Length: 339
Image (spheres, rainbow, N blue to C red):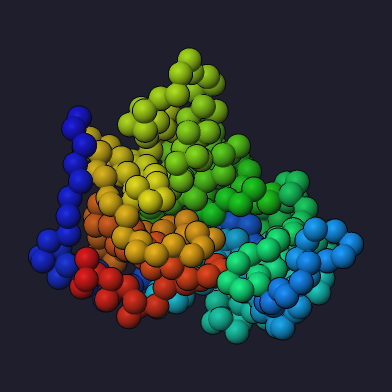
């Protein structure tokens, strides 16, 4: 099959704006790893006399919902209705995370508390708009069977009212084969699309989902893991079609950084989508923006190719911001008009 790279026509822009109007009616279920993102903001004026490292004078700190909650925050920012489900510890950071969720207007009914598990925390130190260092405090082994059954209970109680299900895999212990199988089974029963932001080591888990959204590196590693081995580095087309066939997917959307996106769909040609980014300051969370916007567009009645193009525009906005940022509806509408 030949590759196609389709520009956005005037009629498509009108169609995209109609889809954006439907975002506020969308109901998205997000299951995945909850993380609290801490940002330490400061300035650097000297090098430490103890070691060749900058001394950051701390000026302020801020907290944001991270991991799968960054996807939820993106959905909320674009006026969609989001229902996240994940695990936090009964600790200070867990309380802070739930407080931040409430401050951001994110539903907290799907929070599963585990007194035996610490809340995942990522701390980023930023000086003069540059990330100096990041350090993580977390436990990444599998969450307990008790936690999984609580997550499934939440899914069973809510999936009928949802339009799309997102599985956000950050490799922190939530995504396990049993959970994936049950969620995919329920989603198929109620005819709900399932989108997965994958983790390289878990590709074999994603059998039968609607779409996965790996970046280039994840796609190649996932292909290697699902196909065991190959003698030479394959072309991107081989990777995309190979993942679709091996995992029995309807589509694969590979994000390619400055090269845009590549959309593989069952019984269709490969669609290449040029990047919409004009300036890139920080790619943190760009994948979260892609899958959040993709889900909203599908929930609003978009076809997969339309949804991918809209999510590409959203990603082009968010990489121009510092930190795990979100996109406002007005920004996305403007991006559509200017595309």
